[in-house]
Length: 327
Ligand SMILES: NC(=O)c1ccc[n+]([C@@H]2O[C@H](COP(=O)([O-])OP(=O)(O)OC[C@H]3O[C@@H](n4cnc5c(N)ncnc54)[C@H](O)[C@@H]3O)[C@@H](O)[C@H]2O)c1
Image (cartoon, rainbow, N blue to C red; front, top):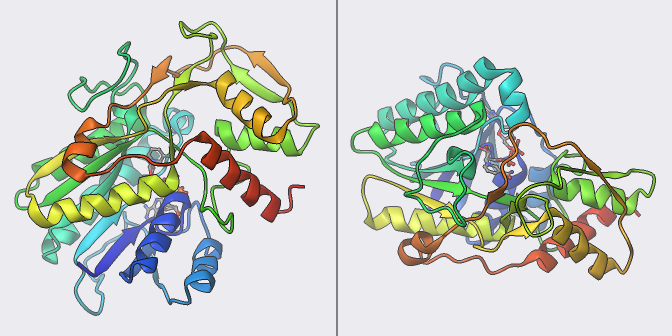
């Protein structure tokens, strides 16, 4: 398997995937509409690897009939999507169109062009609010948000397409950046880790924690934080899996360890040897109490296991924020 089409390859996770595959001598083609990215990460990766990336600016909801590439595509890794839970509740039709129709259109194009392997970006949001200690792939799906539903519906499209072989990876919280800190997630992202980093670097920004009355050890919600470099490795293992396995399979991708938000903050405080002040606010609607992965299936069938921990996450982020002029 040598040429991989990466939708959403200019984004946060997609760009780490591009980097991973180029380092392993794959050819990659990036398809992106740049609705939430620009060329900067890909230009950086071309500089780091010395390899040229073929980039096609295209929206997956457009007519794809005339979309052609020179040479054969062996598989698709499909990252392109809108990803904000709160925004999906405000703009449901935009999310259904972009994420569900985008996946449908891509799948149809793939089948028309005899491309039978797809690795799909799914999410633990397909499970909804459940009280289990850990979530397995057989935990009932009951997404609370439109975003979660768009991912579950997309999985069904892949599952129901005859003679398509697809792996859906249900990510837990994806964090961290490339180890060298040369590119990464949006430093202004409202997600919790970027917010912690911003309030550490910019002392005038007060960190806000939403809810300290959950039924957890310190009252703040518990999440499973998986390093983006481990995550892209899971996609590579999924491509390997698809060489030998047919049909559809979903896997949880997380570390299996849950941290409360206060434990996250304490981890960074220990690394930087400074206190990070925070303020407790009301719970946010739609936030679940805990989401921790049981990734035994991925370990067994994909031969994948997370290797990096929270220290690796914070160290890569500290480097990246400094690189972006945050000190
Ligand atoms: N970041 C996380 O913690 C997380 C967790 C679970 C799942 N995911 C999923 O992983 C995938 C990648 O997430 P990310 O954090 O890298 O997001 P991102 O926004 O950085 O990247 C997504 C990319 O897809 C592109 N895109 C969006 N809609 C498109 C369309 N219709 N046509 C073509 N390109 C389009 C955007 O321009 C962007 O470059 C998404 O599917 C997301 O839902 C992310």
